[in-house]
Image (cartoon, rainbow, N blue to C red; front, side, top):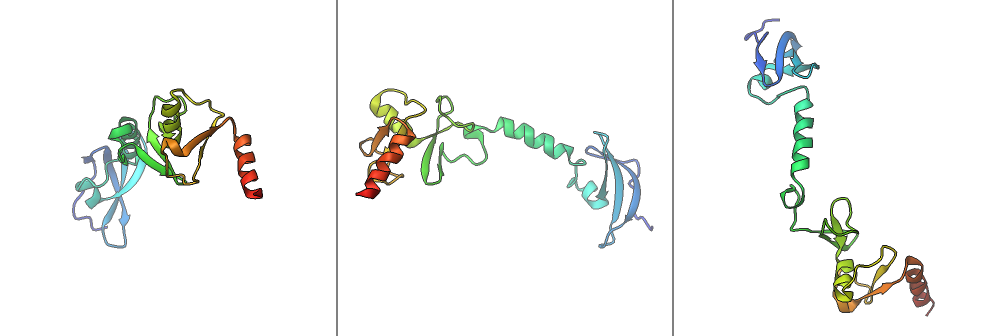
Amino acid sequence: MGIRIDLTGHKYNRLTVIAPIRKNKGGQTVWRCRCDCGNITEAQGGHLRNGQIKSCGCYRSEYRSHECKKRTGEKALHWKGGVKYLQGYKYIHAPLHPDATKAGYVKASRLAVENKLKRRLEQCEVVHHINRDIKDDRPSNLTVFPNQAAHIKYHAALRRD
């Protein structure tokens, strides 16, 4: 094979080099390696030596799962001040709110009405934007329907008129 540097037996991060396999299209030697987790994988010698490859892939999945658990709320990679928009509606990060999503967000309109009424809305209650602008979450622009059926009935009556 014409190996310039013999990496057999060397350890790079979690990978221990077992043997050369072949040359790739670029003429670099591809090595068979055993990962600390027990998996066998292949890697280019240059990638092993410069640290570009650390494991069979187990390191990446462990790192990501660990990092994801650490980075919630303000520490999250995509944190935008606790505000996000879904389907035009504004959501506020309020993880302790009973109606919060799994990610800890609640519709801003719902929070505004609860502050206005000084009570928590029932889950069945629906917030309606009077001027039909879903981005306008001023308390004076919001009203509450007892349930989704009443809200739909209201819109149906508007269409008839």
